Length: 84
Image (cartoon, rainbow, N blue to C red):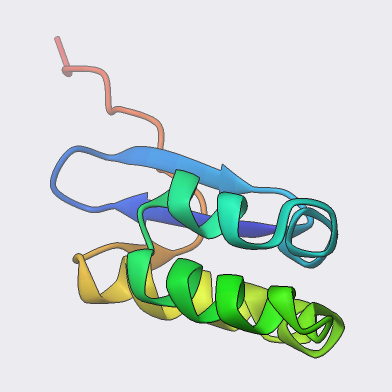
């Protein structure tokens, strides 16, 4: 599972089993996540039957994509209650 947190809004995005979704839905999975470059590359590779190797790198691809957008890896912190 890949968990990414947006530090500015404290929202968490979970990506369970990216390797499995890449094996099942190869280019569509990356397109759904908004990773268009890898969606196109995977479509070309998928056409020739080579998406099994691509599945091993799916988690790292998703992590690096969201880190470039400003996310960090981990869980969201619960909001602090105001002190009386």
